[in-house]
Image 1 (cartoon, rainbow, N blue to C red):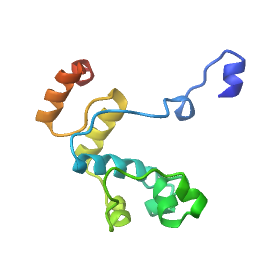
Image 2 (image 1 turned 135 degrees about the vertical axis):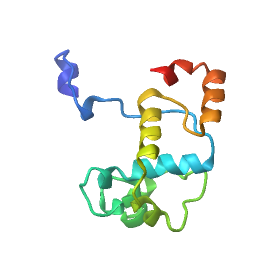
Image 3 (image 1 turned 30 degrees about the vertical axis):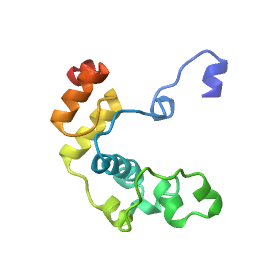
Length: 131
């Protein structure tokens, strides 16, 4: 990225995409879905057999990392469930993935359909829902 910045060019692919995403989330249940989606990255890409084995994930840091790795993590607004690794390793449904990917790609609120419509209107995000 520095090379491209220095030479006034741009790159393509995952390395050059936006790094952080932000979108409203309805409830704790929906928050856990988003966190699970993030912590499944290595597993979903078939890079590991278990999500907690992906060394570059927060799940690995929480489960296997040393003190230095754990200090990089922030506390969640809700407690980490005791069976979290087992839950993360369970497959996600196509509908769940589609909803999460829509929220990530468009900044669309994540939650129930009724809440999505209400929240998108309240926050002026109606256009994120129609694209």
